[in-house]
Image (cartoon, rainbow, N blue to C red):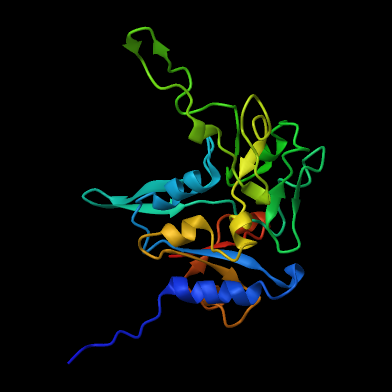
Length: 248
């Protein structure tokens, strides 16, 4: 007799939650991310997919995975903590920007206007989560060329200079053009959200350890998760009110 599996994938449910949230006005949504540290295996798939999705250059990482060793020898183990931008409700990075290049959208996502950013890096210093990095203009293959008969490398490749679609516009990163010289950070893949797709890190997590959705929707998966007793947020004592939650 055939066994019929009825358990619904978390991705399927989150996609349905997302479609329902997008039917509401932006100010009625409250995007949050929940990361289950019990499931994270430190594979860095989320980091790699984020780099690929946003065409991030060397030194710019939106979603690092921190590794920590806990316990006392010989009873020690490793734990992993993905750390995207916290999308704080009270973001310290916003008021320090002298040109108002970073602000909070109606749906709660903190964004950066690359055309306004002057690269002063005040926001990088103000962020208590080290969630912002600076684009220095490097390429992975820079400085490698063909030198006569000695092949020393391919040089900067076309795919490295192809336009990225962050914030919903094709922006070519070449010749010191913005966002080179700008502060950069995770933005919950808003260019995907606006097209009805989940963030890249969510869809590529091999252990279904990352969840995303609208916390203002009581029927959403994330609303259930953040109501659990084992939920916590980083540095809550600072009053930043982060929108990234961890299950521990």
